[in-house]
Image (tube, rainbow, N blue to C red):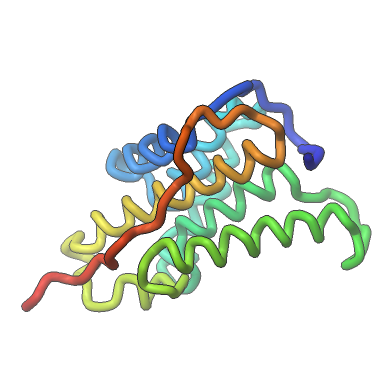
Length: 181
């Protein structure tokens, strides 16, 4: 188990419920990254200000609408860092930062397979969708849920929090495709 840098009060959680919570937050008006951070903060009862949600706002839509790495994945990485990041300049051999990097790598690789497109670039994930028209929203809601659910599984394992689900978070069986013109 890893030692968190924040206090949390959750003794047990359902990653599947967190997946749904993040999807609802996205559908309700948060961006992907904000929804992941908010669901993890709330459902793990993390003793940090709501400002951590605001901190994640710019990472949405592939980092400020640049279309780079998926904002939901960015949110998952930020959530892991909220628990296991470092605040000291201990260099690249610091076991704490390397343990966090391994968790980040695990999430990155899992999401790449789980989204059924085998990429993590927002621009590529949303290619062919009319972003202004909202065609991407169903896909991005699903990606947000996937990342939040997987982060919850990782946190349960690393913190020793009871995972109340009998089944792990599963990736998509088929990729979302843009509507045919």
